[in-house]
Amino acid sequence: MLIEGYDGGPLVAGEPLADRPGFWPNHLWGPCCRDAGGEPEWFGDDGADVDAMSDLLTDPERWPVFRVPVEGGYEAVVVYRNLVGDYGVDHMFTHPTWSSARQIASWDGDLHGDALTWRELVHIVDSPSSTAEGVEDAAARLLLLLPLLIDHALPDEAVATLTAALIAVGAPRDAAPATAQHLLEHSAGMAWHDPTWGSPLSGGSGSPGPTAGGVLARLGIA
Image 1 (cartoon, helix red, strand yellow):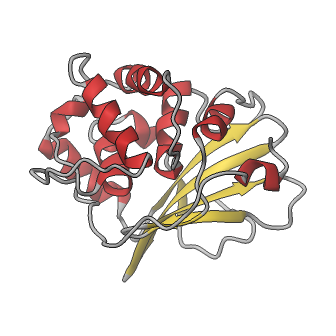
Image 2 (cartoon, helix red, strand yellow):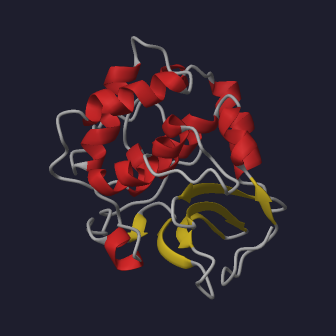
């Protein structure tokens, strides 16, 4: 796999991993709620699932790539950057007319770069392209890009929307509303602190840094 302008390692299609046990706790707890307490069971998984998936996601020999195609030929791309000594997750957008991918943010314990508002996130989720390879399922699209969300004025429907997405990927119905609330509290700058359990991808220190808003407009997407 090749991403123009991205000087990375051995890129491989990661989309099949999103359907396997342990993926969502790994993908969400680290960048979204590294200080949040929780249990893998909140996502319908167990600790063994999470550990096994962590090994796959952080393999230096295979860097998983998750593509979220958007109408107009755009793609939101998530790359697990498994460079030894420089592990992280890179977020970028691509378009056939661009000479190289445009990286907007990266996570290596904290999020650096640009972030999305809820409106921008929903616009991407609701604008799939049926002509490109990648993730088409609305729930998975929302959750893959959720680590980019920073919005201090979330709409009332955000919790219900995120709850439905979590249930769609296997989270128990009784746990999903609380999990959604904790994830959104982080995006609003109110992280829930009770570190009784953490993803293997947890870590880092300091404030998130990026300010949300206007990313898609600058890229010509919205």
